[in-house]
Length: 264
Image 1 (tube, rainbow, N blue to C red):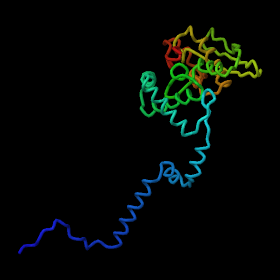
Image 2 (spheres, rainbow, N blue to C red; image 1 turned 90 degrees about the horizontal axis):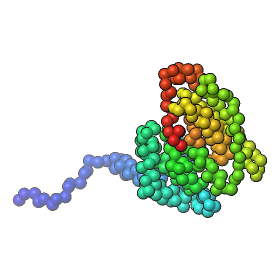
Image 3 (cartoon, helix red, strand yellow; image 1 turned 135 degrees about the horizontal axis):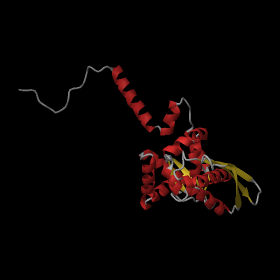
Image 4 (cartoon, one colour; image 1 turned 60 degrees about the vertical axis):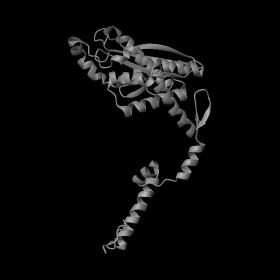
């Protein structure tokens, strides 16, 4: 009679007990690693210990104040943040943001998500509206002058503004102004400075106005520190270089380094 087939594989007799223990331990380690949260793994990689129970308790106790005065827990705030970003997707804010970023530096999907998250936070905490008060600019998020004025009105803060010319650009088209924002109730003042030249403003006749605008943006940023202003962001240029190259730029035609500032 032939050998009867049962469909069962013969037992592996060659595998040592030591090898089995190694396999079982590897399985346990894999399960333990999978169960660890991302933050625990990060802490482990940094050589640090983290008490997750203490962290959870701290998160429950954190209170975040929203625009309008309502207080919510951190968990509730994160849920509101996600919901706000969903609104941006549904109402076309994400599309508009992508279009603006495409014209500036190109689209990076991870950067788009970060920009939308920042916009959502500014709206939840300060009531600032995306695109109108908060805009993407050169890969970052900035608050417009109107955004700070809106915030001041919402807070019931009255202020006055005065300007002083620091440098007359009639000859070389390089202008500089000082702007002082005076908070009427407290009497506190904030001084901002702004420069503009043909090297970073496309329209020559707009250069003095842009210098004043940047000075105002800088002063408002100091008075109402909600984040960097769009107008102030362009001031990272070294104006000593601008002064040295002004004549060359003037002769060859103005170069548009930051074109969309004129549209704000």
